[in-house]
Amino acid sequence: MRGIVLALGGGGARGLAHIGVIEALQEAGIPVRGIAGTSIGAEIGAFHAAGVDTGEMKRLAFGMDWISTLRLFTPDFSEGALSSGKNIREFLAPYLDKKLIDEQPVGYAAVAADLDSGEQVVIDSGSLIDAVRASMSFPGLLSPARIDGRILVDGGLVNPVPFDVARNLFGGPVLAVAVHPTPTQEAVEEKSSPEWQQHLQELLQSSWLQRWPQIGEWLQGFRDLRNKGEVLKNMGLSSVLSRSQIISEDMLVQLRHRLMPPDITIRPDIADIGLLEFYRGREAVEAGYRATSESLDEIARLLD
Image (tube, rainbow, N blue to C red; front, side, top):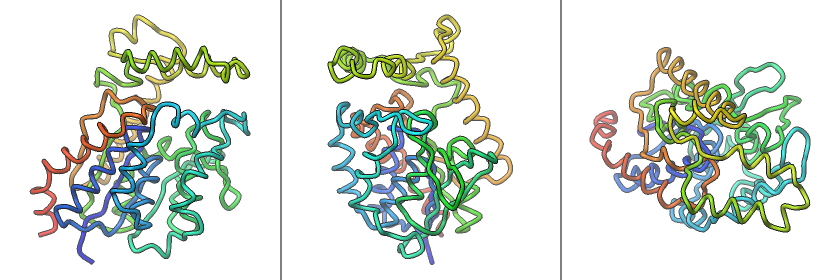
């Protein structure tokens, strides 16, 4: 079957750029025959594999505001995390529930990490919604998922952009879409915009949050790390943890790239979009569309 294979990376709200990537490919008449995704890349990839059109995906993305985002992660202090992910599953259910990976028209796989062994787990059969939920189980935020006796967490821990998985499963050519921040980017976490700071302040003062005062400290973990100089000056716990994760993710991608590189890598201009800034979906989608449009000639040559 003619077409390209997508490797869609993790990166929280930045991953909404994947919608723009798929839209640009469709408009150019470039078919996608396989998708391997990590975290939000697994989610957007599952939507496409299941036949959800980009118009509906954009409607969902553009309809998110900061309150809607927080509702998805409503705290219930489930096993090992702030949230059980119940609301996430309800959000996915109308599109993915009761669908099997093997029955979709586009090849699909989600990447997760085994919390016990530390191994990469590639889920390429079984329940589509279970695969997505496992791949996006961000440690501390969403409780781990359990599939076939394994305790699974976010695939970004082992493979932030699974281009090697994509090639192993579906062949090539492989188009990788990287949306994770890198250590050299000036904005590597939540953008310290007046809008975000206002939202955070309103939330911290809300009566809803007063029932769970410990969440206030957790929310500070999504504050800005604006540039390397400021990180070094303000060595808070959240800054150190966030920076360490960014370094680890970037190194993992570089190492895997040396072993089995993709044919093309697209990196949309979304560095200043924070992990949970889903209300900036329009910016992310447009950035993904723009980056892909600029690479269409190169992608078309691969197919030729």
